[in-house]
Image (cartoon, rainbow, N blue to C red; front, side, top):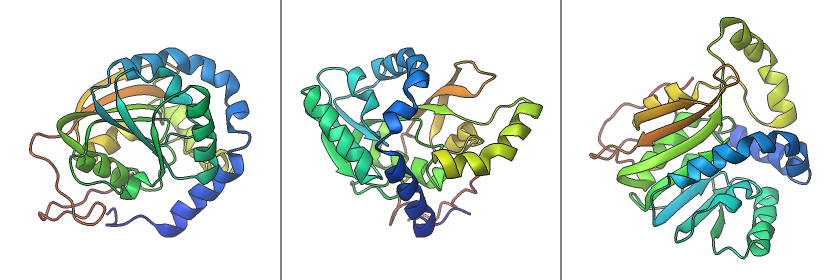
Length: 234
């Protein structure tokens, strides 16, 4: 079962990995980022505002694609990443509220945002279902949660290879390459509306989910106050 609160040790390890990578993160992903440009553009074109949350803002790679007229709050787990995001916002002359925060335990009231966005984030969240439940809590009923993610391939051989390599990749890069993110979205209580396959044998997908019209109320960071059982995470 997922816990009511984040695993402190796992969260600290994740923060430390990305803090270490933050000075070289943009250079490290420079070639791959070219592929992501149309995906990011399309994702942000579908965001409903005006009040929007971006989780896992990282160094601010999505800022180029923010539509005008939105009031955006962006959070990240890692101070080093957030420092670079702040510099990028200044360089782009963007007005965005940048906060240190953990998607597994967001410091916002219920139903605070019209939409939430995350790109390549839930591969790294220690307890992804807990984080997704937090998005379901802080986004208004009927609001969208839009994700761009890489995940485990459904191909039997490739999936097995990804499982084998995952422990090494996590230690070096911080991200899990074998997450089952579509299934995690369903387990979180979000209503899965659309999954778009972006290629690479089903590894890259855009996921559109909606917060149920009867919202999932939570107590302290993901603990159901209505007796709704918490789901198992993969």
